[in-house]
Length: 94
Image 1: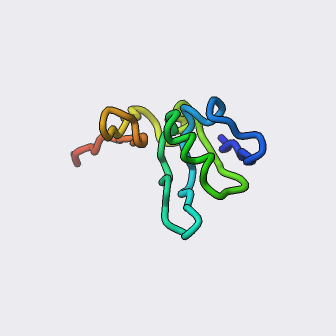
Image 2: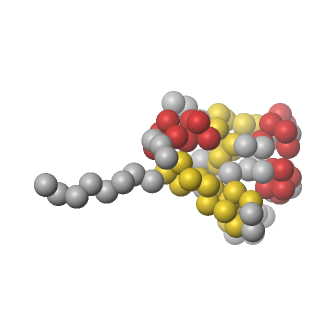
């Protein structure tokens, strides 16, 4: 599996929505504006387009699940999905 390398000049809100960031994206002063693992909804995609970057790496939810396995849970804040978390059950020793 390979993340999609997205260049700024081809990025649109519609293209970004539903993708997951593979790394932190920082603002002009170096503060993390959108964190690794963040799922991009329309608001986050617009915020990302306002940040200074040349190329970002993205995954779809299904690709994220392919890397880490199911189940994949949405981590929500204020009713919106902030990021995805893959949870593996811990097996008890025999």
